[in-house]
Length: 83
Image 1: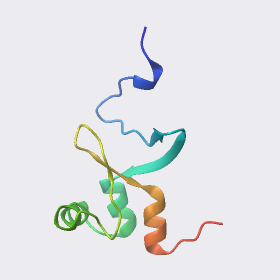
Image 2 (image 1 turned 135 degrees about the vertical axis):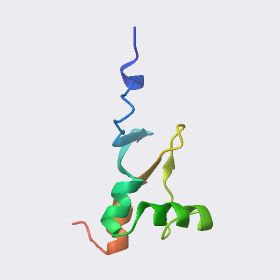
Image 3 (image 1 turned 30 degrees about the horizontal axis):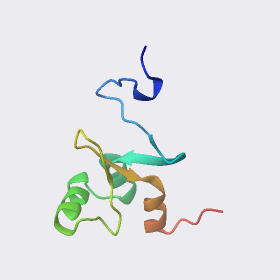
Image 4 (image 1 turned 90 degrees about the horizontal axis):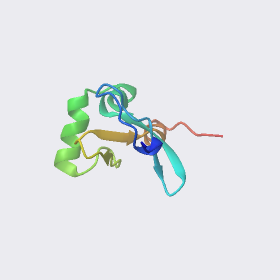
């Protein structure tokens, strides 16, 4: 019997939500995050390596070394106010 929470995903599929203590947070890949900020993904990765964050944002690091960035962070960076 397989656990539905631990379903295997194809290697091209990225989880878009991580459940933490019952709360879901929308996350995006480094490429998506960089695209919304109009910079190259390498710029974001370098900023993270040099400073430990990119513009004050720290990503979630998955066990497979992929980085997922919180969606609400880019909204705060560009000044989008949620109603």
